[in-house]
Amino acid sequence: MKLYDAPPKQRLCIKASFPNHYSVEVKGSNYPFDADKRVDFDVPIIPRGCSGYFLGMKYRDGSPYNVRLIGIVERGRMMYHLSLRDIARLPLDEQGYHVLAMRR
Image (cartoon, rainbow, N blue to C red; front, side, top):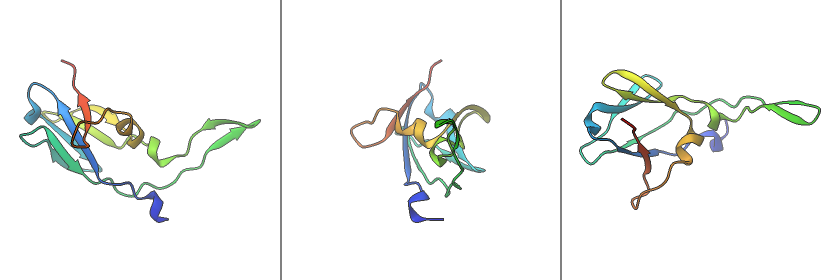
């Protein structure tokens, strides 16, 4: 696996009434949000898939950044699955954390 397939450390900030009820789960590892509603976590190297094309049009994206292997857990129950691309699309706060707003 080439070095560019290793994703950088991920940084999330959660906007929720009770952030201590939430955690991030990645491949069996659990990362709880701390008191200031933030968490840093590593994502393991994701194997590259292959993209499929038919008549020059892509019908399957094999990018490892589209794999939804990051889970947002609330009180032991999986609420959302996110990919690295989903996290990259979240807005950034002033400290460089991606902000995830929970709706309840």
